[in-house]
Length: 587
Image (cartoon, rainbow, N blue to C red; front, side, top):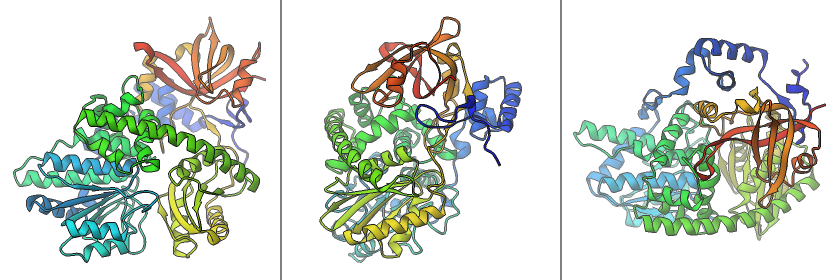
């Protein structure tokens, strides 16, 4: 069966992509939605693309968190975990929180620290060093914590940590509770409770939650038990800024409960009540209220920077502090580390891409490995390779004979399960993760056979069958139609991110009125006419790409211009703006 006709007949754009619009059935549904709801055509098309039927449009645009909240007790071991935390609180036991060093781990730890603090109880924070200790619990750290604590809560890690948890549980009267979301194995560690929607004996209903989402559900259950006992627990809605940050930064799909958590969390973040979030927003020079873009691309990378190349606990300390001065100091340090991280990342990306190109970019897996590549940036570099090739990607840094790596996947290909299988087959020293991201460790002599086997497993899932990713477009507009009011209506269908891509619009047959380089490598464009209106566009990093020379030498040629609409809040004024992603010359 022949593929549907390309949108505006664009088979190969300036960036080499085929443009794809709504199919005929989606167009029919969007027309029906316009008629029954009175929504603008552009908004209706966005909703239909997300699978929303006309009768469900109103509820989708104004989701109520209470309507989407599951019963936390639907997760296995949740009741045991909640009861154990309450016992530790009532008996004034010593609690330690062992967290992963990324945003999800830091936010999960901050949630627990904040809740315990409001209940008048402190806790010890422990985050392992990425280089010296690696991901997740290790035997020495867990034994040390067990000797000084009655309860260890592992957040965003622990599901595969059988030996370290067993070591902790053997010490005195210490018990371990795991709150995680990474893919579980055939057996669980000997913890008191393992709450994880991705345990193999779960039904998968909540598999899209990040660890902070799991921690939030635990606190919902604990607060419920407190109410039954006649005690009021802390306000959990005020903590949703942490859940939103973790959900977006961990690239969890923004659907269902996640979407409602992030929507509400963005509202909480806009109130600027958490010192760490305020300091982070200020150091990132954010203008206007936060969006999922800000969480994912401005705040998240800075929180991550401590775990990647600095002190592992900086992110969690920032998110949990109540002292504005301490928050500003940590945020400044994280900003410095993030700048350093970008420099390291750029060098490793260039080397990894050159190596991958030499090996070939048309297989089911793109991979690269290098001596001394910093383990804190290999995950980001893997993302860059994935984006450039539309293939699952793995990047590994070696220190002697030991390699530590990270992988990123594409939609429809479960990388975490394949990595876990490699570990079970003995090709990896350690490996695990989830569908879209995974981590691994391996010996140097296992590198080639491991990557060959991984490519084989990914090929069975269809990796490598596709060329460059198509560009999905929701509707065609004229520049004058792109108003702030319409953009705000579109944003009501968000937030947008993983699993819920931002809507993209095309402005057909446009004259390029202005195009120039701004900053180090950005492209600024104005297009349109006096008849159809004009619109400004910005393409970050686009000056050196294919669109830079094409549009700055446009002359009298005309172009279809595509991208995402946003509101520019610069200088206290609100103006519509296009985040330019692609163009195609009108033939």
